[in-house]
Image (cartoon, rainbow, N blue to C red; front, side, top):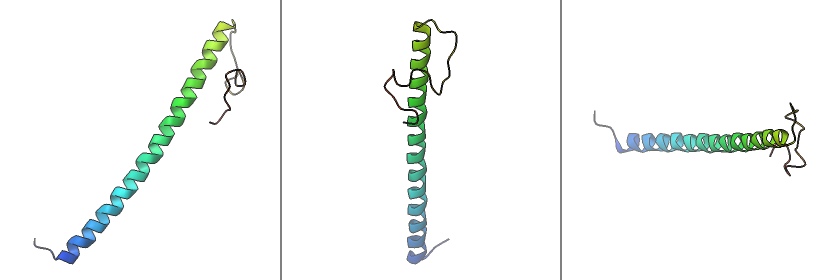
Length: 74
């Protein structure tokens, strides 16, 4: 069906808003992935440190944080 130029302009505005929201969603997801990746790196380093020290277990929230030169939550 034929639509007016004004209709198409409104449709384009809506599409642009939708795209902007999707871009914001993507940026949030990228930040979350980066946070999870960093947390996994820390966890892996804690495991390696504990194994190297002959430990049979550790508290993930506390073990090796200072020695690994990181702060929890980065």
